[in-house]
Image 1 (cartoon, rainbow, N blue to C red):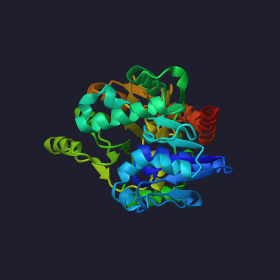
Image 2: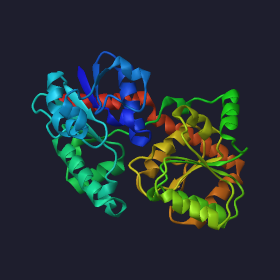
Image 3: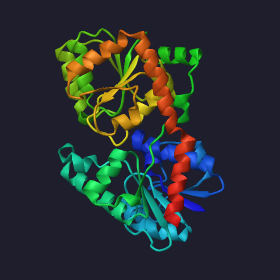
Image 4: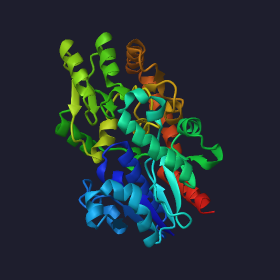
Length: 372
């Protein structure tokens, strides 16, 4: 079978959508090598190099118009190319498929990660939000099958776009298999030296934006005089200045921002953390939670939404807008080594439900249903 992927984010996005795209392409090629894979990217000069992708066919615009209007090529002109390449199934990995998808001829699957832009419109620029809605609605109605990355996202697709449940299949996200493997002592020593890490620390990984709520962690630490460093890893947005202002006003000295951290360093950074904290107000799934659980690190995240699906029974859940509750939960875990051991053990067991082979097999099941 000839399978095409929307590979834009695999080559240009360093965060969650990029990781999902890279992991899916890599795992499908590894587990089902008998198929041919075509990766459609809007530009030849991509940012993220990945040798594994070179064994697949890379397709990018070569005409003058395609090179200069790559967004049109990806959204409105790609359908013709899919037909020319003999693609049997096309997978839109991030909420969209081309508007000119050839039907009949090429079957399609779309992964919808979340509809936060519809549930919480106040968090988005109106123009961006309009584009996201148009693309997601078109994909949800026109694709042959929809992959929702959580039960929460499946419910949102039904509620906000009006798609019948029988068209949707929940296939949870996974994380890179490297997070499940123990990092050895020499590697931990290398990371400690490279990043000048303190002996013990709390960890936050995620985009530094209002929805993900980093400031609430810092407020909790300041409120309860918790004397333990916080390591922050994530892409900055203008919200970072609000965070830094709070740090300056309260003379907080133990918040450390790590920049340009490669993915291969993350497992060790997770595994050396005392607690991973993720007080996001809403997510489609929350991959960093799974990365922490598979790294055998205790997790604190938010009540409600999809978080219990990802975090399981061993994770601690708090009101993401309550610094008091978050501070009390951090202190409770830090002061109880038996609780830490229990959260590590049962959190890792929960993470085993999201192994790559299981997820990849489920995605292939969706492909086969789309082709029926």
